[in-house]
Length: 178
Ligand code: URA
Image 1 (spheres, rainbow, N blue to C red):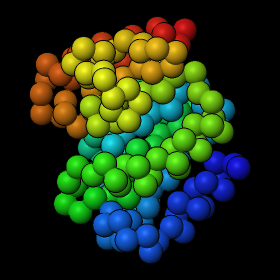
Image 2: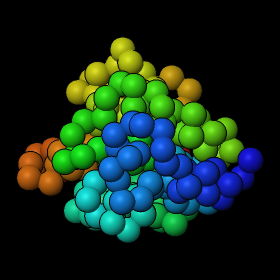
Image 3: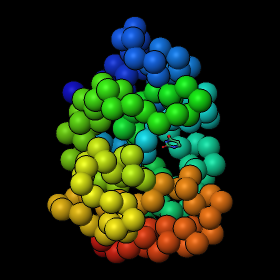
């Protein structure tokens, strides 16, 4: 399967009964090239992502762009997606059964791309890959073969100290790729 075929399947998905899939404006597959060395994985689309169909295009996305630049990565060179492809109503946390429902799409995307590093953003995305790891302990470090967790940029929007930590972690990500 190609990334485009996976994206088509996600965009056409409806009628499963899970609330985010039923109530979202559109599902957001993610975007980026199949040759990406890095896959960034957020939690779920927010309001702007739901409206546009593109990942990380709101305020958290602006900071993500800064972080990628700090890591020496062009946004266009990275595959950016979410664990859950549909916006939960009111931006509530996705439930475990909803995460499980969406999981095969992320797995399929990772199987096509085979990235050097997977960058989960925040504890919800991290839990998907390493349920036992704590974001406060492993942020900015390589975990196992190919995980490189960062704090979620949304958490740093109103916290200057966390923003500094994120920028330093982004530089560490760049160094891990060098
Ligand atoms: N937050 C996320 O986790 N994902 C997005 O796509 C946007 C904001």
